[in-house]
Length: 213
Image 1 (spheres, helix red, strand yellow):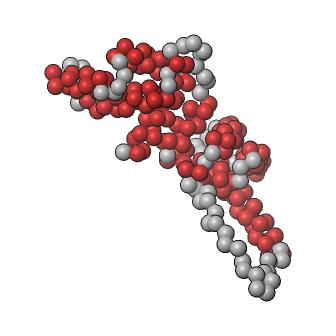
Image 2 (cartoon, rainbow, N blue to C red):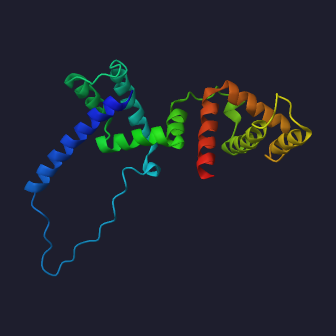
Image 3 (cartoon, rainbow, N blue to C red):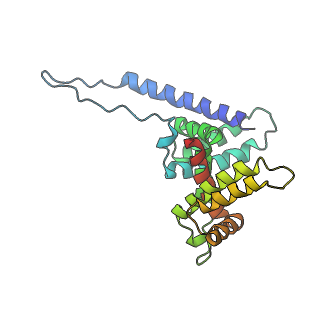
């Protein structure tokens, strides 16, 4: 469904690059004076590198893509009209992101689970003050997520919903080895299932954990 808007945005990028090229041709190049050395410049950051995406850029992207989807959802597979192309391009331009950067984030959000999880975590509502979810630290949540990864690996092999004695021992070991007391582990598990903000944080930790494996 997003193929049409991406095409429109890439067209806009080409137009912007063409304009930039024209300006570069008319600009007077810098010429160092005699005996003056040209300063060494650091290599520019790769705009396609997901590790360079800031939280602010992801917020801008999310606001822009919401507007883009509002248009693309009406296309039903058809090519966008010039007016629709302009509307989608305006959504990106209004966000303050360069089109190249927007497209890089768009590709990363589709292909990189960490980027997608970061966006969802930023959008999630904060937990209710005083709730269990509000009191879960990042360290505790990391311990919980890592234990859950081990638990899922075991339960994936459970037949007919009945764990073998060996599997039951592995499940118990996953919780005990997490560093969390059983009561605390269960409290966090309940909070994750009930609180969307805590669940989004857990999903982000899980995405980072899986990518690192």
